[in-house]
Amino acid sequence: MTSQLRDSKLSFIGGGNMAAAMIGGLLAKDVPKQNICVSEPWDVNRDKMKAQGVRTTTSNVEASEDASLVILAVKPQVAKGVCQELANAWSERKTLPVVLSIAAGITLESLREWCKLGDGRTPHIVRVMPNTPALVGEGASGLYAGDDVTKEEKDLAAALLASVSKATEWVDKEELLDVVTGLSGSGPAYFFAMVEHLIASAVGLGLSEEQATRLAKQTCFGTGKMMIESSEDPAQLRKNVTSPNGTTDAALKSFEASGFKDIVDKAVKAATDRGGELGRTLGKQ
Image 1: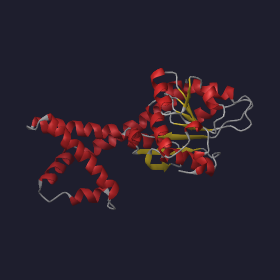
Image 2: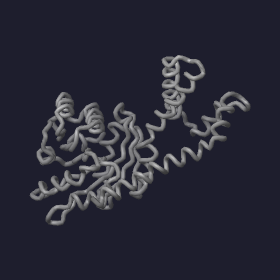
Image 3: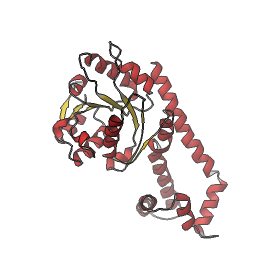
Image 4: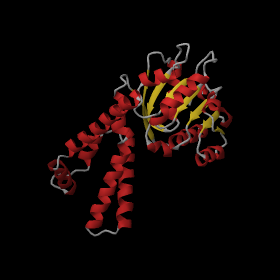
């Protein structure tokens, strides 16, 4: 965590789960509460933020008026209106804030157009694709910045994401953020689905649901911890636990016969394609 981040005025436009996760991470890293302001229209979310000691408001303009970094944490469908509202309010500012967008699918081109001031100025913008494990401090995030974003601004964005992400990866082409979406953005749901089906299979073979759930959850957690802590890649770890003609080998051969690799490829590609499609559709609205 950089001193630059601790000294920055941070504005969250939107106070949902991802904003709450980021704010929790920032406070855990000793970012002063008075340096964080959240704009959130819903009383329940706003009260949760207020309980953490940060400043809250229902006004996007008020939240961003003295901010050096504005985190756009709203639903993609309302991003255009919010950006235009902020751009109108910033017309008198000499120095524009850096905008960090976690609105899925909204392209840099759209964000620049929506955030453009009447005098032609546009704030520097960084796009981010985090994922829901950020809620427990174990996120994985992809970032992309336009050519106008300075190294200092990129460092500030990366420091913010590092408060909730254990993996923070910059991509050098914007379309690769859609791949990040297909991999880690949507990825938690793939693992939830896998564990869901493991539980159902074990219950069908005689285990109680409670037993199967505990064993499947811990297997998923322990496997993830092994991958993080091991110096070996996942392929080698798989080989390490697969004895020839053993039980694991039988299961993996069943996966292979069912086209497991193609199933995964198609799933990641489907999510990647949908991310790009959403960006194009919302950008035209």
